[in-house]
Image (cartoon, rainbow, N blue to C red; front, side, top):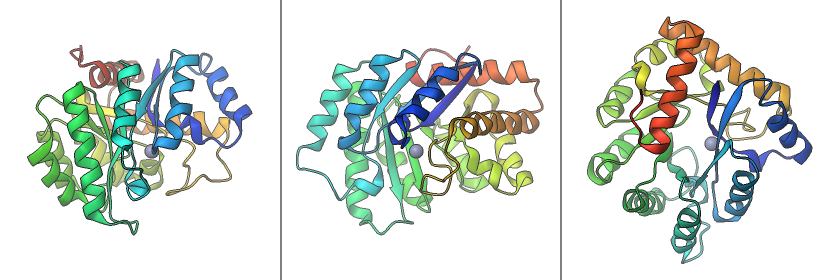
Length: 260
Ligand SMILES: [Zn+2]
């Protein structure tokens, strides 16, 4: 069984396409979709997807791109969503220097969500673009004890990867790894221990930071299979062992249960 550890069902522009992705899941052997909210406005849609389909795991969070567009009591609303959904995680959160949004404000919003994740014992899905040293500093200082976290769509350096693994990170790879020079992607995947590896599509964001014209159901399954194939090559394990490991890692990340 495959697991997609990070996507945004609520951002698929066509509801029929979204339904078709979920309808094909059984035939395509996908058993879990970790659906990340990015701002208060999309949390109700994420909650609805999870209520309607048991395979959808909801994450509620404020993405750094929206850190400067929040009402004063946004974190009260966030806690409400998390408390109503005991299996939900906190995400997508993080830091992004590629967008022109005040880094101090991003950091403040990120800190608040780290604190909430720690207090409610929820896993965290973290986004980071060009802010790796800032991210490491924040995590070293402020990651609450025993908080499980994943770095989604990892695109940092080999050294950054080591530092994050030392802090206990799960590392997730997406289609962006397929687009990069494959040897480089394979080397990064190879240096993630098999019990910390996660895989994802980040669908429908099939292009950097945006929804591509090719964001349709076939592309979705092609992408998910593509990252599994790449990981299989990188880790040199057979497909069954890889699928089992990534599924177990997903469960451990989400629920805190031991990986195997
Ligand atoms: Zn995302």
